[in-house]
Amino acid sequence: MKNLKKSYIKFEYVRIILYVIILISITAVIIFEINIPCFWKENFGITCPSCGITRATKSLIHFHIHDAMEYNGFYTLILVPFVLILFFNDAFMILKRKIFKINDISYVEILLGYGQHE
Image: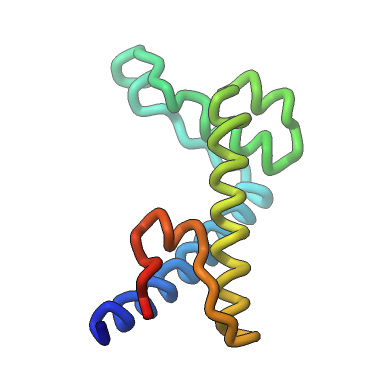
């Protein structure tokens, strides 16, 4: 049980670092005009299900929702809200544990099987 708790605590720090990297990346996209070409489209001429995700993300960051829908509607309507819910829930639970010492479980932890860490 002790090893599970140690791995859980390490995993919590990995998530915090990941969230900071994501926020820095979003800030970089806002400040700098970063363009990442689609590997499949450029090399093989094939559109893949993820085509338009980078442009849709940039559009969402700049609050151009209509443009994001045109680039990749599924990503904009389904995946982005789902990921945002997971992110905010997990970040809130981590802060809740660190600041208020309340031991709740986040959706990310449930999905990854860390629900029985105590």
